[in-house]
Length: 187
Image 1 (cartoon, rainbow, N blue to C red):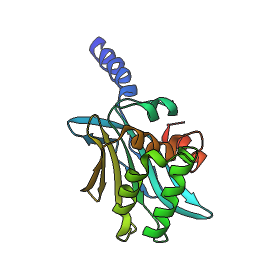
Image 2: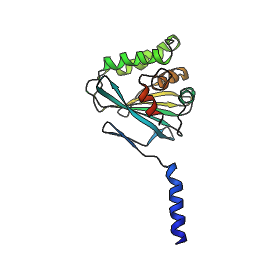
Image 3: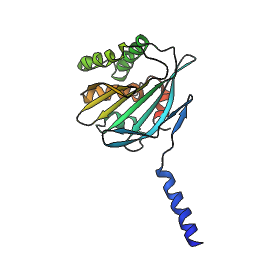
Image 4: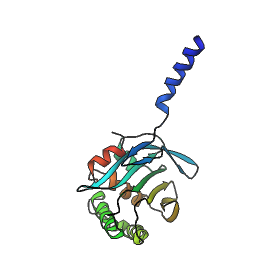
């Protein structure tokens, strides 16, 4: 009987250490992503909507849970944002326009020093974006932001300032959507 109670106690002690996948908008975000040789844990996920349309599900992945947006933005540690497109209403043109606006908001209209990286990033999305596409922005220390679409690497953008501005689109003091920021921070 004592072994049974020890097992139950041990099991309950482990529960806070385990992660649970999050389901949003009919999409289950994986509880882990791999960044090089490191596992990243789902910090939080939410739905980006515009007007009455749900556009994508976004998940933030970190080495360990964190709800401090400014710490995450300024960190050089491995992290990722995963977007799962859930609307056929999104187009490459709309995505590019919204992303440029996001960079402007994230940097308080101060994008001059990263304009080349932003242009490189926007060029990645010149091909059609389709419902069901999975886009990942994976920050790898001393390498840069790896951009993948449906598991295919499209570019590596090596700039800590660019990474901070990119993650700031969702997590800055002026994010694209406050409710999405809160969800990605696990609040």
